[in-house]
Image 1 (cartoon, rainbow, N blue to C red):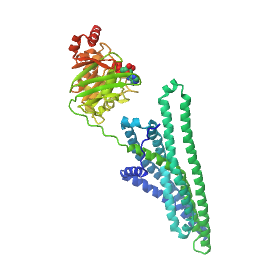
Image 2 (cartoon, rainbow, N blue to C red; image 1 turned 135 degrees about the vertical axis):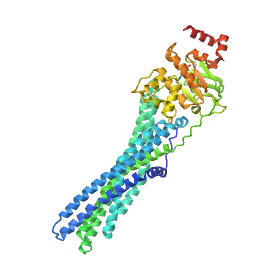
Image 3 (cartoon, rainbow, N blue to C red; image 1 turned 30 degrees about the vertical axis):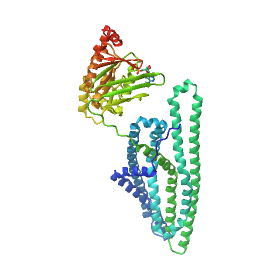
Image 4 (cartoon, protein in one colour; image 1 turned 45 degrees about the vertical axis):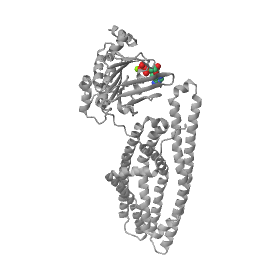
Length: 568
Ligand code: ADP
Ligand code: MG
């Protein structure tokens, strides 16, 4: 509840980010801008032609058909240009948005867990979800309309001024009323849109936290209280949205008032000028049409203002995430480091599962970790690989507390094969790797079956089903490709005597050659080939030494070993 929200960028910063994207695409930007101006300008032709037509009738011209033809041509031209510009503007907007969305998703994925733990999960979710969707919607529908409406208003005002300054001036009486309406609206709306976005984030947060803890909620029959919290947040979001809507309607009334006052002034001044012979009836017709033309786009601007403002509120939230500092991944230590666990302890929700573990892996040493199921081997592997934060003690690499994930490669007991090609799955360990490097990694771990299938074979969900040993082999190939100085292998539970398991043992040896390595060994032949064996029982190191020493000592490991050899 007290966790802080993610930062929000200033509107200025968001503007800069968008501007930089536009400048990176000068051609597309120029085409969109020019087509929008041309479309708006084409819209001025029809009122001008209509004015001429009225004058032609007024002065008894022989035929009005040329005017009618021109009118039709103007309408077609305006329609075509408007369509073209809408497409160009929307496409440009989509491209820029795609870049921004990538940046947001990329940051969200790379945020260190230390940062993610401190912020509210729902806030990030609503930024990557709600906010991106809101901006996307504005870019495809509101942006082209706003660009076209804004330009139409601008060019129409220029046209009015060029037609007759007195008529333009008459229309300008509407201006103070507009300004008043805007000055009334703007300061009221911006904070409400921001509040709306925060309320949405909080609603998402309430939902996420209830759903994440749904087992606990059920266990304590706490559904009603959680529902009440979600309902309360939803109610609050709805109240704010309704408030925004009321405000918006009020604003509409103020704008309408400005419209009719202005039109009345143009007509009054116009016909006074006609009577004194200063302008033609056609000119007043054109002026009235132009003035009236202002209101369609102004109304649209007003209508989409809503979306634009709320998209703006979303945009600064997106840029806030995109701008987050992600600490650069530390460069892996080279060579074969010493890895040292000092007084490491760990507990999940209950009693400690690791206590006081002191363990030193010498440079390039291969240590096998053995012990009964539940002894804490996987937990220790996780701590060493930086996947779990120990509750006590520390892990040092060459004497330093480093980001372990950057130095230690982990092959888990259960490997997830991602949907996609074989090559992509291995390559996720080093995205820049070439096909040749991927193939070399597969060769190192003896995954001949993979090379036979082909790098482009589809695996994972929707693709080729892989066996557990095959998946492990892929994970070993990933390790080879990532080439970390330290390796942690959590061997899949042994299937005694199976050929796959023996191949895997060779693969593991090859993949970890030259690395400081900890192997959780279920197959004790694997332990026998290690430099040293460490026996874990109930979260504590109870024996360690070479295989031969421990067998000779006749302790716990010797028992495990004779049980293992007895199974044949
Ligand atoms: P091993 O790999 O030696 O079988 P583990 O490290 O997986 O042992 O488990 C050690 C103890 O911690 C076990 O009692 C297990 O039930 C418990 N444990 C493991 N993972 C979790 C977890 N994610 N949450 C809670 N308890 C866990
Ligand atoms: Mg385990």
